Length: 385
Image (cartoon, rainbow, N blue to C red; front, side, top):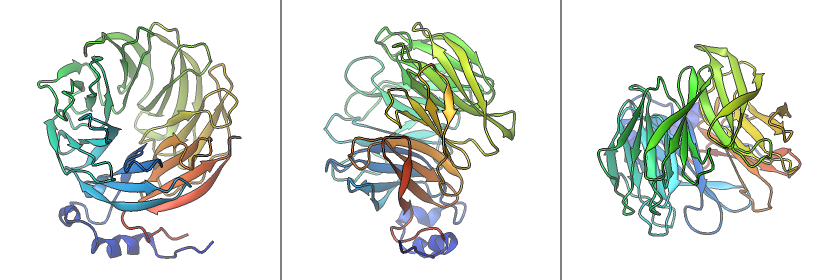
């Protein structure tokens, strides 16, 4: 296959001339730094697309999928300063997917309404947040069929719950959950089986479990001792019908003490440590993915470190290392989805230093093949290979 030998640095300089006006006021020069990505059918053609926070340039890159595992950069949506969190959902109930961004230096959450064609408004709704928001999730916390959002505030150790009005707006003030320290990740799932969504939130030395009441409020339930947890996943790892947790993180201020742990849930919202695996050197920054990659009925884990680490589940809550995937430079976040519609789980990850997204197609046996490497800056610019 013919490769483009244009260097990443040259790509950044060349693309600067063609970037939208949002890039003109870029505060740090030529570092694009794509981080969190999310997947959905943004232009409603039946193929999965990808939205990527380009953290260094304060925009979202929209990559449209062709249903075969290839992606094309459609354009960029301007946001606020240092976008970190990203979620996709139909926030105004018009049938089109929207983008929700948490902006770390902007201290806010921005909603971009989708038009169903892959286009998005710029800052259609802006909600003030607290504590340098780093992650945002959307879900219906109060069961009124309107999407709400939970936003972390690591600088102030809080999580804010905003109830949606179904029109793209949110009730203020938000409900505030306190008591965290450097909380970098949060997820939602029904951990106690009462049909109400709950929260798991990382803190510097633990993961905290909050049980939802179905009305949009949450109460503390359990604390799992960890070390600098940075990434979370919820799934039934031991096939007992109860949700478990996957936790990835680092040692104290050290990139040499990375780990991935599994915790088995008892169905009441409490968890017990099952396994901890020490990982190689690397900087744990983003989000992991959980899916059944080898189609044996047991859930597996993909984890971004220096490469994309693959761990196959044995159905008891233990993970067994498989062959890692060679990603780009500094992989940050990985998502699992069926990008080529063959019924097998595929993977996509962001590569911070390369300013790219890598797409790997799965064959259903747990093996993956690189399908595409797409620049988040311009469609023809790729890192040197």
